Length: 318
Ligand code: UFG
View 1: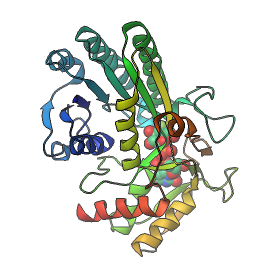
View 2 (view 1 turned 30 degrees about the horizontal axis):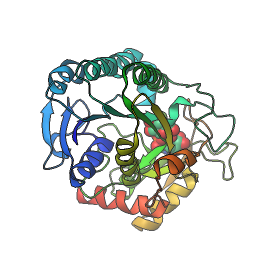
View 3 (view 1 turned 90 degrees about the vertical axis):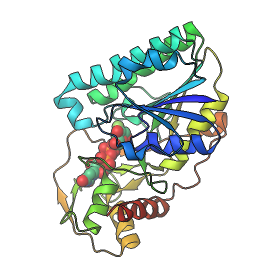
């Protein structure tokens, strides 16, 4: 297939672009490099540096079999301080992309949605049928886009899939997490092991969890990429499939820090800090729908594997 990958110079986008290219697809990456890196675009993929809203129509006029839409603003804290950046950058940009797809009859869409659409869950693990009550602007914009996609798919015949990521982590060779402002737990902990930070702060140890620190469902970025390939193959016209992607097992902040100590051999000093605003205690996916309907199975999402791959990537970049 000829595929347009928005945000293919970013973390998840570059890993998926690499896997799509390796699977024999023709990949065109469009990215404005606001947070991505030109050298993260995999070899063999054509790269267009452009604003997606401005360039989507001209690009899709070439004729594409599908779009994988990764490009987004994705910092929860920033989304609360500067919501305009999220409503325009995520929702308005995606509406422009959907319009361009409609005009040029692009048949397939895979969209990067998020567990943040659920907010504070009533039950864990979280199924796709859970109530969607986002507690931050980032999650609200992704939910709005999911809803727009449902109506576009139904009315205009697209075969669409939203993949709701839980905590994506790990790396794929030279492709990994390189945020200018790093807020994610595993890269931060590994920065301590690399000597780039003195210590890690654990945000709260009085949560209603087994060891008092927050529990998250960490999923290896290559398992996530596999789900995108399956979604592309299996999506049906006029339908919008929505799938949670997690490994179904939660790990606490303390367990993550311990796993990083074990893999790196570094003592990694960790201090307890106040709770971070907006953090739910525990987020774990029920991914049975993706397993049953897409035939997806996470195979690299053991915590040690995730940390080993992230550590190899982080060390190689020093
Ligand atoms: N944490 C720390 N110290 C840090 C950084 C994080 O204790 O220095 C804790 C957080 O409080 C949280 C856990 O580690 O309990 C994971 O935090 P991350 O920032 O790595 O990830 P989040 O769970 O906050 O967010 C991720 C994605 C979001 C998505 C959300 C949905 O980054 O885009 O999952 O579950 F919305």
